Amino acid sequence: MSPIHAAREYVLEAVQRPALASALPESTQAKVRHSDIWLNQFKRIGDLFAYLKRFSADKQDGIYLEMHALGLQTFEDIVEPFEKRFGDWVGDRMRASDFVIGETYSAHDILIFSANYDTRAGGMFVIESDGLPTAVVIKATLSGGRYANEWLEQGRRLKCFLKSKTLKDGSVQFGEHFKPNAAILNVPGLPVLAFVRHTSNDRFVYAGAFSFHQLHVEADGAKWFELVLTIPTEVIADAGYVQRQLQDRVASALSQSQQQRLERLANAPKKPKTIRTVSTAFVRNPDVIAEVLFRAEGQCEGCKRPAPFC
Image (cartoon, rainbow, N blue to C red; front, top):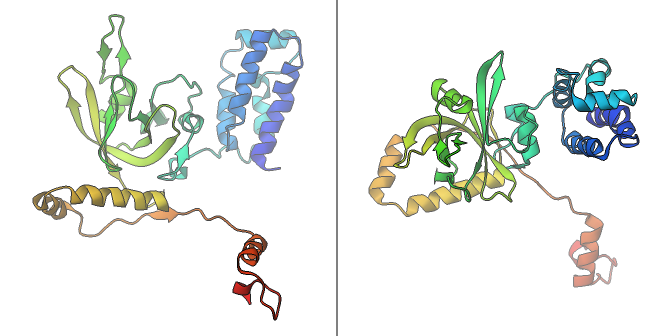
């Protein structure tokens, strides 16, 4: 059993299963089952430990009191023993460099990285270290909704509306003071990790780390960031995704005038940046392939093997 599987099993055995087998009210057991969904999403022990620690702040929580009245352990109770048991791994958490450009991720993956465990939360989160922003995470949906984000240049330049708030009168406030907006506007070079999907039914695709280029204001007061892809040397991308992006950009360039292409060429860096790519291969069973060929091609009369392998 891997360490993360052992850690999840420890939490299930210590808290979840006894709670679901107890006389807790059904409404409380429903909340316990909901936390089971989260437990299954953790891939690193450090992220699971951070999730458990968030419950230790207020021991007057209603669920905490209900469970203790029945002699049950809670997440608050197992934080210290969990840390002692899995101490070698509690510092192992998701990092920005873990994300591969072009690969898909669930909303749970993004929220765990952002240390936000509410699936109803908005689409922008600030990552901090020692109280200072180190990155902003955005979940951008390209269609649907009142303000749809979009690619200004496929895979390279992204239009992303600022975090906003709908007021009682139905108007929308795009507050530059809202925490994610302020971080992007006020911290030069702050990485903006973009996860993009076409509709709300799709999984998110990691598009890479972007940087703030310009703030735009539309006639109705809506505000959006123009974000430009940055390619640090340590970035990793899916090989197929990179190839598709190149094909899309070539097609876009071909649709432009020669003058536009020459202007872009003049501004292009002299030395292209490099990225590491990963690809997926399917391992076939050679016996199955041999059997298929045998049936299709027949046997060699001499050695009785399928003809292509003779």
